[in-house]
Length: 411
Ligand SMILES: [Zn+2]
Image (tube, rainbow, N blue to C red; front, side, top):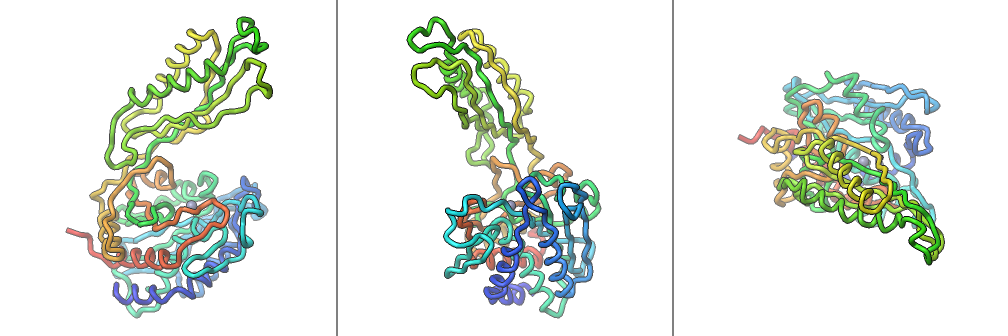
């Protein structure tokens, strides 16, 4: 059966282009991104799934007053397998991010452009590549005469780009029963260009804003003021000590340690001859699960107090964003083992389980104790102007999914 699915998928170029063309033409922007939600795109998918002959389709609307329809659509579709107690789920999201500056696009973002192996348009990679790959698998399964060994499930969620409260988070809160303990779950929404990264773990994220208050004065008479930029600079350097204090290494990750990087700096004074009285900067922390974020915050407090005392400034800091990481999916779990074997079989490469510094929707599942992997073969153009994806990669991703569906758990 696996060979039949893979050969069906390998001839899927035209179908892929057709699906991508339709999807790109239906912008699905969440209200926080200035859009009206994913309803139109979900309706397109609903009709498509029905026309494919899929009977087990469930709508899980998340109420949302911020969009005209009053809800954000989540859709679950299942093709029954011989063993109906287990499902291989592919979870993709329907929403996109805005195209940004139109000048930077060489062709209109909502019109698919095909150039050899590449297709261009907003959403073609994030997350149409994974979404379309799952549809191609479904069409391949339905074109055959026998059911797959286990169920094939597609879950299309809303609101991924703006925190998932109306998407996967909502689905898990209200329909946790959708997932059985033995289910296999793939989120094709992050990955490397060689497809070798099978993501099983994520670091916690902590974004901090620091405000250093000194006293503004003329630069020729520094003794009349307190230079906030000098104190802020010292604070930035002293915060580097977090690397030494929280130095645990986990080889699943690259880099293997927690990271603490000063990033954004707000403008202070507009002219050269004024000593600034306020400097504001930000630090992006990615923390291994071994550390509680409270420990980091205590160390930050201590560092700030030292700088305040030494420079005579007042230092305030606040949390801009905080995402505590969920326990990793075990590299030994069936979905990871199947993914590794499937990628090896299709790509002939050497995939490995890895952790990343960013946060994905996988954390919602992992927090509930549901193992899952994040994987796709991506060029990494998501959110950029001229977003594009590879037709070949998408077809290969679909073949990997077909392998996972048809495989026995490696012994
Ligand atoms: Zn995405």
